[in-house]
Image (tube, rainbow over all chains, first blue to last red; front, side):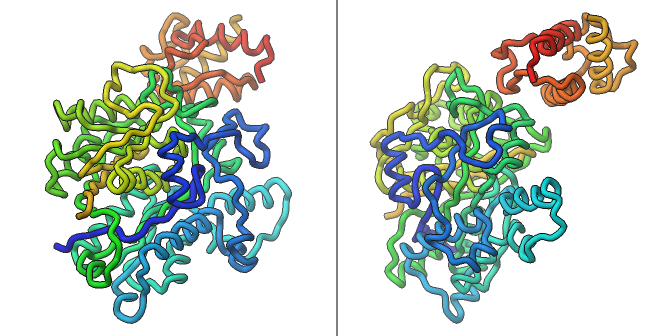
Length: 403
Length: 87
């Protein structure tokens, strides 16, 4: 078994164009959720989201690239560049063949689907651009990362709704740990803030019209976000040999299935995933200082998640911190676990715990320290990141401070 | 009112997989076996049937300003929404 470390990270999301801006928003408790700017927004009943604003694709990509890159692929490539620049790893020869890309997304190229359905159904056009299929496919982002950085090893895309990124990073972790790969580029991306993407969520009637307030008694639903985060997971000996800067160690991963309900979460499924990740990482529950919650802000998730944490940790549940950064960047669906892992690396490296903003009223069913509204300075050795998807698919990662 | 009630009963019966005559005005949706997902589906069908928007958030049914507990309550709510033009 090889040790697995993170040597690079990158992101773009509603809070910032990179990790530094995102960390700074986490520290300030700044909320990136606001009025949506998109076509036909007046036909939506939900009009807020964690949208990436002030982003100009043409400043980063040329016309040929934009013809092939859906917004979710653009986000992925921006995050990947930041992560790989920081890591400094380059892929040639044998290392290129021993390294790959595993990314999560739920909707893939939804902007492309949305625009082109509109074009053929609403505008009655009978012809579409030749690259619609390679642009909208869920693995487009993964493939473009592999092509850009010459990654020739195991590469694929995972789609497990809201747990996609965590499942992807769990696979990447196991590829490196088992020796099947030396370096894995991993994380996830989502760009679902288009008319059809929001309309579909509206139908489920679990969306908030005003704010995402996880764990607050007056919470009234989730708010969608968008963006990507990408990490470099690297074999420790390899990273050490090349003198790489190490951000954190990935120590454990667990995934479970509720096998129960297509939308309602299960305490047992969540508990098994949380305790499984700690067991996999040989981590004692009382070593865990911070959990990045799934924390969607729906009644069902938040109370189930708190009950699961209380069950798994017993008395220690009162001594650990658990926050939901979805309150700031929104629920970036298939990319959310990756964006949220940044709150874990920040906790380990900078000893600051990202808050749960928008918190207004205590809920006795969510009676944990959810770091309300203000970031907190605290040194933690171990962190967990939870993701519990529709369909009852759960994935939890455990990280340890390095050094 | 009976026009609303009949149309609502038809939708609820369809959702609950029951015969129309087995659904009474006084039944609660829960008694008829309609769970939270079933309720969201019923509301969708009602909105389509009456061309209205029902202000309902599945997150916390107790917090909604609308009473949808019994068949009668649903029919009454629908009547109000139609008459107030809640498109």
